[in-house]
Figure 1: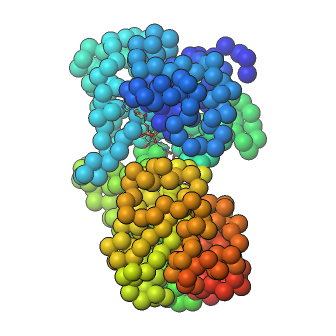
Figure 2 (figure 1 turned 180 degrees about the horizontal axis):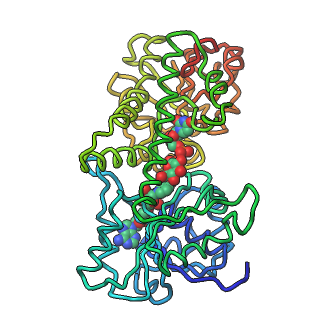
Figure 3 (figure 1 turned 45 degrees about the vertical axis):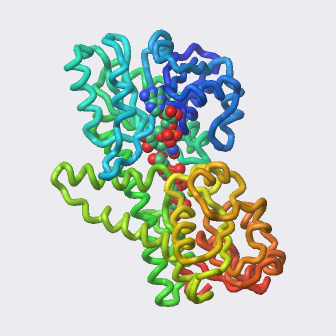
Length: 440
Ligand SMILES: NC(=O)c1ccc[n+]([C@@H]2O[C@H](COP(=O)([O-])OP(=O)(O)OC[C@H]3O[C@@H](n4cnc5c(N)ncnc54)[C@H](O)[C@@H]3O)[C@@H](O)[C@H]2O)c1
Ligand SMILES: O=c1ccn([C@@H]2O[C@H](COP(=O)(O)OP(=O)(O)O[C@H]3O[C@H](CO)[C@@H](O)[C@H](O)[C@H]3O)[C@@H](O)[C@H]2O)c(=O)[nH]1
């Protein structure tokens, strides 16, 4: 890919910013990365990657000479006309998205006829329209605006960038939208054909914004749905793994996102489902389904308590080991992780808790107090009355269950992700309890 490619700016060097920057550098662009966090920029300049994301460090170091890091937005404005915005949009107390970082970026833009903001951050529908209005009010009406939502998943973000299902570009049909499409062209099916390439969806700004929120809300709904099916399986003796397999073979349903478990977490689903619910409410529409999706997820995170009490009785003074803390495997992200709710509930119930995560310990220590951070899975389970698998890291799937059984004081194993073979676990002398596994 030696062809001369358009230089770009990327504002915000979190997950989305770094993957976007490294990805476009890989495709041949010079990328000017900006963050207000001077410490983060200094680490990136030294070649340190502040987040754990498989393949990202290699991608950054492969393209080191094309990646430029700075806290000065002027550098990006000088060198690039397209400024990709990848700052955080966390939830506020009301559940609405906090747009203060986005607004700070907008306020920092000068009057210009040659620049465009390209919004990668997940924002409420109407944000693009509002930003364009602000530009007009401030006499910056030459500044263009493109919505280009991001669909990467943590843990597989590098592959998701290089092989997108789709690229969504919402714009006003001007040079900026064309330029964004050109940047993505090497990844689009019209150029490549084949299964690895993505479809382009070029549309208006509001629709692009809604594609992002609706996609996340739909996936979260699918998870809450299968979790409720799992709960009914427990009452009726069916096995949700068999049920999901049978359902997923219907093309119209599909097998993905039908894994029952201890609820969805992460920086996106909880926040974006709430943001869509709020957006609907603020616009005068009561989005009933999303209320249920959120409530089911909250209850699902707590259901493990009942399972533990079923086997152990009162949890006062009981020793419980949590295997896995990150909101899913292959990331150190602890945002909205089920382990946060579980460790708090267990402590409130009087249990003693030991925890182990192969990667997320440093992040977890900032958020979880009063537990023992163990050095290994085996260390965590030693002396435990019960073990709960919270995050399905491969290393837990590969555990020697006979060794685990020997180290534990009790025999209860709650497989919160249905990741283990119940037969193997039982053969080791443990009592297996999954999620919705009536007959397993
Ligand atoms: N994490 C994901 O998997 C994912 C996937 C798709 C979309 N998104 C969306 O992308 C956005 C970014 O998410 P993230 O997880 O990468 O966020 P993050 O919190 O990891 O990173 C945001 C970065 O922006 C920086 N920042 C804040 N204000 C700034 C400013 N005014 N100027 C420059 N930098 C600034 C912060 O210092 C931080 O480094 C969010 O809207 C999120 O919803 C995230
Ligand atoms: O069948 C499933 C699939 C996922 N999960 C849970 O759902 C959460 C989210 O998982 P995943 O979607 O893989 O991770 P994210 O990195 O949060 O990615 C989601 O959120 C991103 C941010 O918006 C989007 O870009 C992605 O497309 C979207 O999948 C995790 O807690 C998983 O354990 C389940 O419980 N069951």
